[in-house]
Image (cartoon, rainbow, N blue to C red):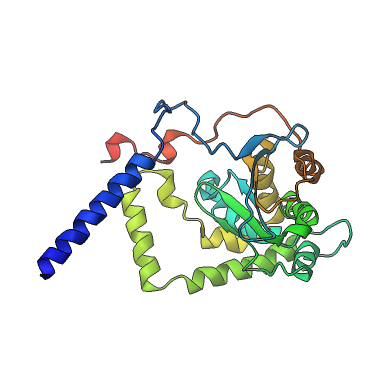
Length: 281
């Protein structure tokens, strides 16, 4: 009896999977390397005419009255020089010290967000990876316009720091490093370095080099920022219950004080960053 029941369930599962596959749209795209990736028809995208950022915009009413705002920067630990290892991550931390026009003090953008229920950690945060640095806010829909301006300030003012700012954040980054050095993390890092031996990737874990982080200076961090935080390397992503009155030019106005559209730059990463030379095997 049990065998018959299991067989029936298996048959029903196979039929359900078959129906699901048949319901999916057929692939009509191209597998060529230069072909653009397909995207949903409900997603608006383009390049902001003045600030030059790429934007992605999609209206979504769930969860109700909430909007997700994201800035993705095509700059991560893989883009660091040997003297900058760990500074992409430090720069991400420094961004939350941004000032605003309304309040010229440190942390003013963060404090204004928190005053509207956008708590640090849960609703405003960021991460640094090998290939990107991403800042995101989860905000009430009726706060969308001002939150957009504050997000632009976080990224646009990220490198406007002095030695006291860098000293304060380096202590936090070093503590993150210390707390992450359990046996599981050490094993993961060793496996990673072995797997990617012969590539730049193996020496570019986002936490960086401790000596570089301990001795980092504001001008070194600004140098990384000025090279990589350019309009053609930034994308703003808006998903949620965006008010119907909001137009794309509102995005442009928010970022134009910090970024300007310029000539497209060549792709910054050589294949050797990711693929070892055959002689290394």
